[in-house]
Image 1: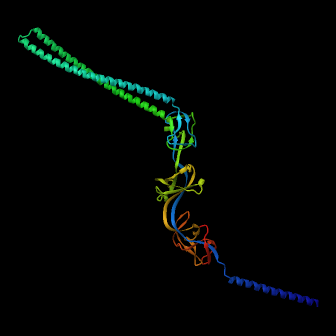
Image 2: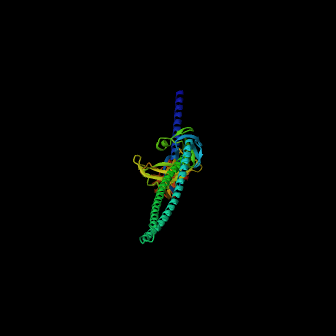
Length: 434
């Protein structure tokens, strides 16, 4: 009996387990059926409308900032540095004295040149005074000659008359001889006056030659003095323009040579001065972009020390010649530098504006899918996701130009595009961060 009872208990337990299993299976199937028939919730995506705006096309370069002007200051005369009036970092005005070279020897040379010039001026004044006297004497000799000629002519007529009278027996031989002697004496006086006139004329020629020689010598003395005074003034080294002293290479007492400074390109100047009221950058434009970069093109420049600030300028010069090795063309950009905040040597990011396109349709670059045969974006129409193939144009820092395939009324998916598929229903909200 006990065995029968145990058998019945086991049978009852088995039946209970079967019933429980059937109930569990039924419940699971019911839940699966409900899950299949229950609608899936719509995915939430962030959308935006394509923006129609003006688009600036730029080419970007990295370059070092350079001073607008830079000059190494050399001495034009040889000597020793007596004094430096500025040091590194000092600002100098245009024409300010930067350094002085010892001028004792040049002072002596200038004084000697002045003395020589004074002597030459005295000599030429004396020669001119002599010439004036000789010209007066020449006029006197001309007058004497004229007087002697008049007397000689009168005496000759008197002698001729006395000869006629003597031949007629009207005068004595003594009277005739006296008249003839007087005429001969008058002719001798004429010859003497002519000799004196010729001598006076020759003296004038000689003195005029001396005056010309003295004048030439005077010009030589004057040039020597001018050179000495120029050398003396060149002992004061002046700033060629306003700017900062960037280098000081020599100290007071150092010897400088005008010849080496002028002929030896490896020699260093005493000082280096830089004008940074305007700065410049030199960029190398690739061959593909040279047709778009022109003189006057607007330029933006940013540097790390002034994060968030933009400095503006323009293209000042284009070389118009390509480097055959790099296939690039040199371009020089000038940037006004109020406050002299931009410093030579700063590393800059340079954007050259080469074109402005008016009213183009644009989308953020993140919305465009480029991994397919043709660029496309995902849009939402009537709550359903669609793929819209597009044709893109140029890009700037804010997005891509859409040439074809979109209108400004299309809702383009920006956020959540990787979570949806074409023909899927979605709910839209305005994209954030735009």
